[in-house]
Amino acid sequence: RNVNFIHGQNGSGKSAILAAVQVCLGAGARRTHRARNLKDLVRKEAGADCSGAKLRVTLLNRGADGYKHDVYGDTITVERCISLRSGGYNGYKLLDCNMKEKSRAKKDLDAMLDQLNIQVENPVAVLDQEEAKKFLTGKPEDKYEFFTKATELERLDRCYASIADNILEQESTQARARDNIGGAIDNTKKLKKEWEQFQEMDKLEVEVQEMRANYGWSVHSEFEVQLQEEMKKAQKFSKALEKRKAELVTAEQSVNVTDDEEIALKNKLDELTEEANQAAEAKTKLENDVKNSLAPIKKKEQEKSVIKRELTQAKKMHKGALRRLEMARKEILESQGNAAEEERARTRKIAQTEQDLAGAKEKVDPLKEEIAKHLREYQDVEPSVAQTKETREGTERQLHAVQQKVRAMQAESGEGRQALAVFGSKCTALHAAVQKAAKAKKFRGPVAGPVGMYVKVIPGKEKWAQMAETAVGFGALDRFIVTNNADLELMKRLRKDVGCGTRDCALYRIHPRSTEEKYNVPAPPQGVETVTSVWNVENAMAFNFLVDHCSIDTCALTDSKESSEKALFVRDGR
Image (tube, rainbow, N blue to C red; front, side):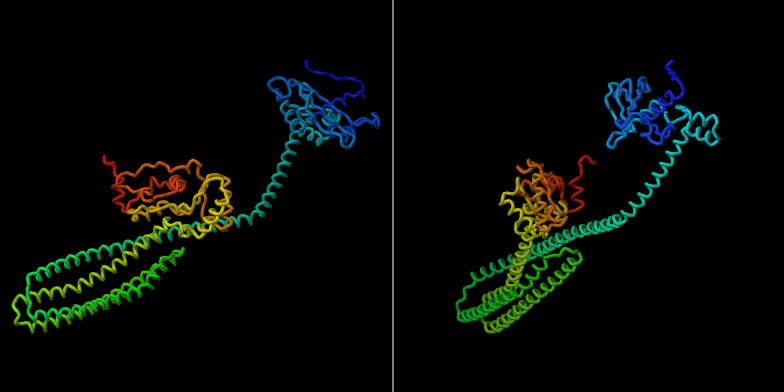
């Protein structure tokens, strides 16, 4: 059953049918032992008009071993075309059960034959006359060749040799590729080293920012302590002066002397008072001279406040500024010491004059002696009062300088819109370019920046300003904010036009709804300060960016470890 026998006389075409099946299912012309190439298999008797030959073999495709039954159906027809003319089609076609073409790929034919276990080049499966002769009467070499073909060792050997050739070719390709990427590897190492250097520069920039903030706040704290001490001294001397004035008024009211000696004494006292006034004018002139001499020192202090970006040079400038400040203080103290010495000389002169007058009024009653006693006490108090006044004025000048420093620091924190350079060397130029583009209506949505321009320190919260800036981190206050991709691309071009580097004036895209109003962030607990309670951010986009990017509503600020532990302590003991 299912076995076909083909019989006939010699030369009737039995072997031709077998060769046709082999060629149609993928065998080469040499395998049939009838021709060297496929064109020689076409019979010449067909005439000059013959364009070629076409072979078709239909195979059953049923059962569990079928090949892609859903594509080809119950039968698969293999069509092999052999063209004798140039431009004709030479190849295979796989047709389904409805004779519709599904594929022309040789790999699909090989996969189908492998699935159906058809081996057209295996002499055990297809044994033609030539192979039968070799098997029966051939040499041992021919029989071994028959054996290798029958067991597919020949095919495996060819596959192995092809794989070995592919491996050698891949190794050669790999060696060439490794040689080609040698320069790229060196460039990658160089770029990695440069990236590490940039990382170190970023760390140094952060340290410079911290040192600049620490220096400003240390100067502020020092002057504030000095101001409090001088105010206490001034209050103490003011109380003593009021007390002496009250005692003098009481003594004058209790005395009623009208004799000539008392009049002369008063005249002498008036003369001494006039001399004291002249001395006071000289002291005022000296104060003006001291003030004029302090002008260059103040100028140097302003120059000192400009700290360069490199940490080493910033430290050197800081030490030099401290030395100049100490010299200025010594000069002021020496000037104050000279004025005090002159006051003490005048006091000694007045005391000597009073002693001379005391010898002249020995006959005056004890009441006059009481008046002279109070007068001497008044004269003793007067230099201290003058010195206190001078000290108070000096303290007021120091207070004024400290206030100027605080205003300058607030301007650096964003209070002054004219101090954009503090956020980076390119901020001023980029801000001007953004304003120009906004006037030309090139932006499709709102644009804000730099963020630090909208930040103000709430009055009374200056002591937390430095910690708030540190909590926000480096590279946040110089950001520019947009709301869409078109504006983002425009800002990139503006950054390129003004020469911004990779770390200058970074960009941030925020959702358009975040431009309407500020986020409703909760207030911090009682006794706890956060960045939102220390800073007042005017712009809604800048405020929402700081909340989203820097979490300023959750950054708690404390001035010591103890206060932070107290703020975080839970009452149930956890």
